[in-house]
Image (cartoon, rainbow, N blue to C red; front, side, top):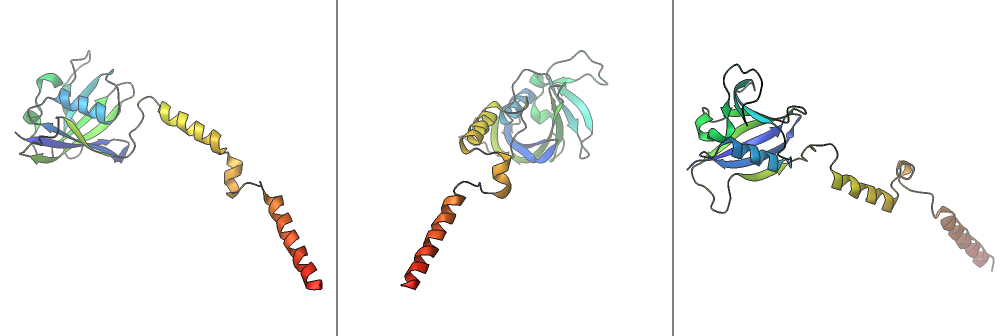
Length: 190
């Protein structure tokens, strides 16, 4: 059984990608679910794949379902289309679009074919995650709450960060130096 390893790049930033391994006998719906899981997206929106070439031009559509729109050619359905049936090139490419309102677009490229499956993995499997995934609905709640707590705890406002140091304790240090000088002067006069 062949294991297909795909690299899924976020269209906006190629340094953000996920590597996913799937069996060639699994469907495009399995790959669709794996991409959503790897990028921490929900499963509430429409989605489609397009067969592509080296220039990332959109070809035959492999859709989650048949939508009410005009198609140049009847789309294939993800749940009925096996991944292995659409691989025509050792570097086969697909374009994946999720949530047609937000138009999240990912470039999917076949980067490896392995004849042996790993018994420790459950396919499809996210093998590698590079870069911080885009947030599907704006700022991720947990990060913004944690950042607010840190800012509050350490009083990270712009004034304190400009010079790198606050003014706190400067008078105390100066008086300590003056006392040392006076003590040295007194000792010298004795």
